[in-house]
Image: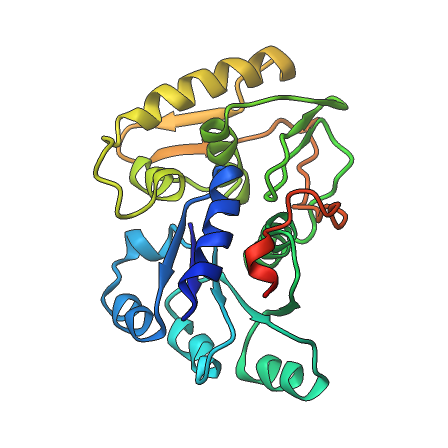
Length: 248
């Protein structure tokens, strides 16, 4: 889940629409709302956060301090115009990245995914094996060919991949895929998605890389022959698909 802190509703909605098209859940909060929300979050909610993105508003330098010790997610600042002094100030405040607009939502996701992998000490992973998984809306690559997945299954694979070797509960996956405030679906829907995902991966890899354990959840366990991939950034996209409203 991506949390966008922004005072301009139209700008926030433009980005949320872009994330939604890629199957990523986004939540828009005003600065004061975010401070109240993050202070009352439980572990289940914070574990679903992939990135906190701060728009251009006064006092956003406090955002990294609010996240410190609570959320391992990427802290990214969006700036309306590039300026060296303000960029250095934001980095000094603790932001992981500073991005100038216009920017495509896929680039934001790629940067956030790279930061998240680095935060989880997964930088040693290589992109030369059987399975390549991305965090920017692209489908995974298996044995050199693109494996087209429904967006929910793709998001589940990304979630498992980013926690390779560790158990991820059904609730954690649900929060990542459907959002922490979604009450239209039951957590059991994750079981159906994972069942179909496992069949697809087994057909391509020759074995089932997803383990399940009652009370523990699910984890991705790749064979010795399957090199795990890093979250790679995609090149800057063409003008088509850029969130136009966010440029202003």
